[in-house]
Image 1 (cartoon, protein in one colour):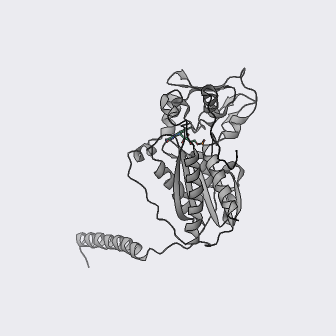
Image 2: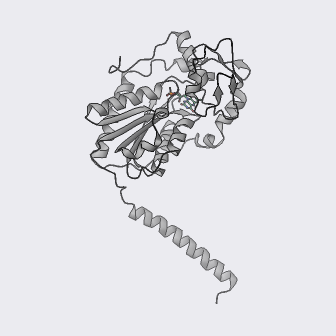
Image 3: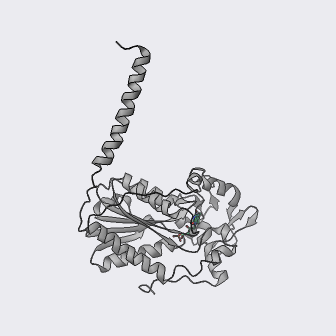
Length: 313
Ligand SMILES: Cc1cc2nc3c(=O)[nH]c(=O)nc-3n(C[C@H](O)[C@H](O)[C@H](O)COP(=O)(O)O)c2cc1C
């Protein structure tokens, strides 16, 4: 018989040993995850995009893979049923960075996936501010796919003009007005080819987060703070609204009802897609008390046309 003290001591030692040996075993026994196939035929390239940046890169990646003879299904996540994902031999998923993380819309789509056991997966993000956690956001997206059974292969990041409406009045956004450019598109073409090569050579990737000061911000609920201070007085101006319903098409949580002129601000996830796509500035918000305009209006006002890859222009 053990005394109570000795029993607790022995239990603690045993538990630590089990934990340590578990870790050690994992390190030594870390087997390469098995990919469904190293000769992929059917590929899914899908993205969540509010102002077109992520979609533009996705379309180019899909084009490159199709030109290599693969059967490619591509489109915005709102058009692709998550239930079809297990049919593919390779999945590439893209998202904008929103509040230092992948967008709510992309994360939600991945949450709704069934098991994608052994399917090789790769991600990309587009972002507006250099050095704002974009690598980790792409890793977050990849990790979510890995949790569904996918085998991580690669991540990539593409810089653009920031489409965060409260930032659009500053000069910082205009500094990036030359992006995306041919260099961005070439990077996307090479990424598509590289992902395919890695799958063919059975080269999976161990997800590698970077240490950044933005990690704590992710848990602070930045969308909530934004709603409180940068999305005040969120409403539709009935006199300006032309009932095109583009705001409803972008809202990832169905919080907008144009016909009844209603916005469920509790449901809103502050992606600002509605403000960004409204063609007539009928979607109103105030940031710290001042009216804010969206990306569509910004491009028009500054006479900016976003460059398209030569494949599509
Ligand atoms: C609500 C919102 C939050 C954003 N947060 C970030 C951010 O944390 N870091 C960053 O670099 N860019 C941020 N951006 C900029 C977007 O990531 C960038 O404009 C992206 O390319 C937009 O992609 P899309 O056109 O496919 O929607 C944000 C944009 C919006 C609308």
